[in-house]
Amino acid sequence: MRYILSVLLVALSLTKCQQGPNKKVITDDQFEDIYIEAIKIYAQTDSVYRTVKIDSILTSKQLSFEDIRNKIRQYNQSPKIWIEFFDKVTQDLREAANKETKTQLEKE
Image 1 (cartoon, rainbow, N blue to C red):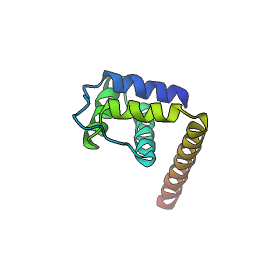
Image 2: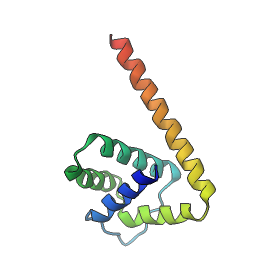
Image 3: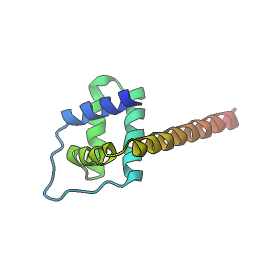
């Protein structure tokens, strides 16, 4: 998971997102959604297009890399926050995978 976070940070740092005049506060749920989307992009997309897709996600949510960085700084204040975050992300990914498997089995 830390590797994926590192990839997300590198990809975001390569984007053309710039901080707007007002800082946006990213909720925990938004951060989790962005992280999960980044994981999916990393797994399903050629490396050439990852940055573009992640940039597109941030743009659609009207967020910048600096907004993500601020959220990461907030999380870095306590390892417990990261543990809870990764537990929730793992749980959500498992639920999504189980739902997808169930849907595929129903189609057969």
